[in-house]
Image (cartoon, rainbow, N blue to C red; front, side, top):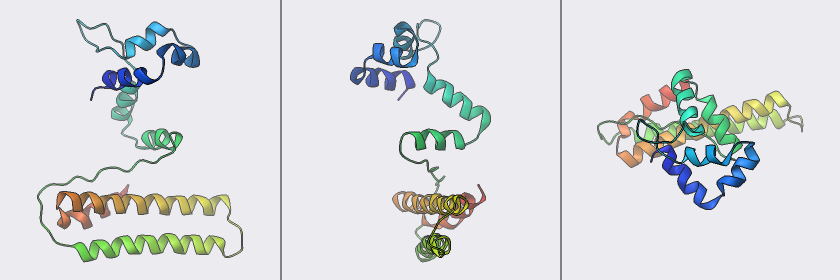
Length: 160
């Protein structure tokens, strides 16, 4: 789906005039965001296209992570999958269990003194994000039938 199409659907539920008021922009600008761009089209570069350009230019996933956090969620990069080769399920499962154990160890260590500092909280969050990424990688590989790629996908996630 193109960004202008998504915005058009969003504007069916939320008034562009209200959005314009909330953002301090003209209603005509908001309406143009929901129109295609190009030589014969009258649309203008919308915020979604600008974010996409920013991501392409910076290649920094923290931008998406920040947006997802603001929306109450989180970002997990999709693993790259190729040929299906069923194998490596037990080692991959063990990897997820180990990541979960590592996160629990981080929590237990932080809570040992009955308080959790900001630094400890950050370490717990980092472990949690890694566990979510590893698990999502596992699930994606299961869905695609590319089990042989699980170890290399998990190793690639850990390098980031």
